[in-house]
Length: 175
Image (cartoon, rainbow, N blue to C red; front, side):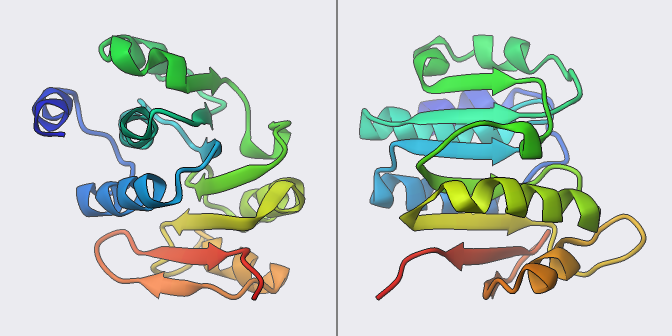
């Protein structure tokens, strides 16, 4: 992980999850050993690299990441050839992904309520019974962020993970 960290620190940083949040998700993936990981909102791809590195360390699983805007994500991924077999990037909105049996979902695309609601509606039926979902930028809603309102409207029970850029965690696991 140290060599990976040094290499990733040389990349331009984006407005994705903060390092501690990336490490939390890395740890979840290492522990869960999911087959299918989905990230909505790739931006330049730094968070995707953390997720893919966890899969690489597990020696199993695959990440599908999407963003409707071309931020040259593939250039970022190409700097980590050891991870290329673990990442599929698609230029589209999260609500348009067609992936079933999702084990781990990171929602960090457009943060307006209507987009988050559309992603929940499209992807939650595709979650496995033990899936984990992280919602990024859940610190508070405003004119541009409606993550909490979307979660509330969907009737999803989450817990807040404190820290910079606040995240909410949802578990699909039923006892």
